[in-house]
Length: 455
Image 1 (cartoon, rainbow, N blue to C red):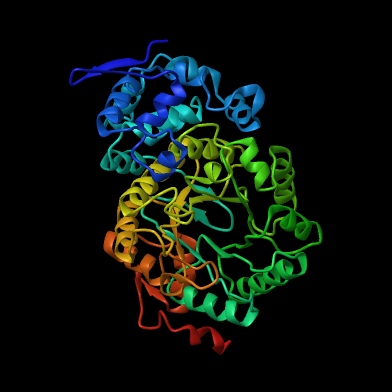
Image 2 (cartoon, rainbow, N blue to C red):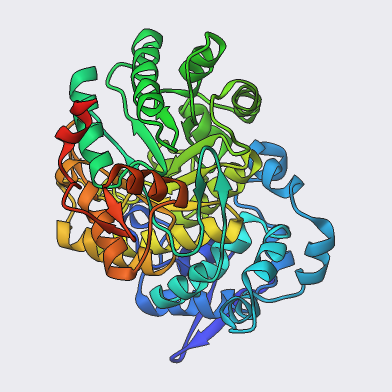
């Protein structure tokens, strides 16, 4: 297979599809750290030029990690709808890009083709797109799911109420939770990152959040983002679990570093279907992030965007209610500055939706990255315009437990107002009944958490 082109009088040749994919990626500090990124802008453009002529069949036959060596590869390849694949396997990546962006290509058409794709195909077409292309492509793809309410409906933007606390204080979490609810945050999930991963602590937080949901008749679901094995045990003991969570990676080796396998996740999914207190049929919540596999030395010389696409291929197996890329959380070693963080956020959102999963984003950054709150607000606006399903919501955008900066409760409210969007319809009806919202606008009552102490 000849992977060669001549650009400005210089010949560029790539020794494998994996190398070509890495060189065609937009600049990322993680790829540079791994020694696999393009050495220059000219080499990057040459790689994109060659990649545009590669067929989808070639990408399927050259997975980043061999089929026989990696269960993530097997999950993705075994799930391919062969009838659809046979129809599209001769497309080049360039032709695939043009088809996706064409005005005549609908969400339903993309949804059907999605079933015939592998992660490498998804990653490849992403590399040929500009930021605006990624937004236009993602916007036209509609993916919905239902737990106790519905995510992904056109015209909606949901928010995870993330009332983290540095000591897991139930009183502190409850107060923060009420503040978020008063701003309209919490329709995607009330989700806590626990300091204490013990079963007793996790069950205590599940009980407390479920009690709030039941008392106030909130059309949402709860989740404590402990390790999946802890949540599985909580389910078996009758804890009120709304969504089952786990972070995922794009290779078997990287997932083993998280302490999970496909078999374990299959078991967790079965338990969720049987024991979750929510209506379903979608019960799973996953988080991802470019650089995950590289940080575990489990990337197999594959660029971080392609490894990210493989996570979405794995996540699709479990029909998740929501997935989000924690885009700037892993740090500047993988996404150096706001330019790279914004690009990765748009890439991940597009790839998730193209794979067929409801996709949100933790638009965030760590304090040692070259980014500011304004940069993250820029990303949030771009993603909202692109049809992002949901964002995180923490007080003032400053997570005091995880020590990183992201979107606040009032950011989602502002984004809804700016772009004419609404909460999940079930959640909006609940807010209107309490006088927190009227015809899609927050009322004077909104933002006052003391309202919840009067009952």
